[in-house]
Amino acid sequence: MCLSIPSKIVEILPDNYAVVDTMGVKRKVSLDLMPEPVEVGDYVLIHVGYAMTKMSEEDALESLKVYEEIIQKLEEEESQP
Image (cartoon, rainbow, N blue to C red; front, side, top):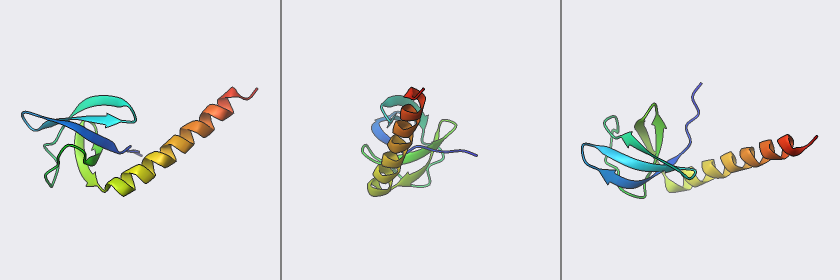
């Protein structure tokens, strides 16, 4: 199973690449498999270094909120004896 975290495009690079921000981590991804054009500010889902799907900002932010809640819950559980 693959869980993809929404990533925000922060820079478009030459040769069909982009820099994305995934919960504070920036990395370079290929846009070769994107079925539609993207621009800075768009949210995409990534699989093995390829942006695969563009998603709405509303859906991306809701998904990121859920991931943050999961992380917070895990951190709380880890800090309990």
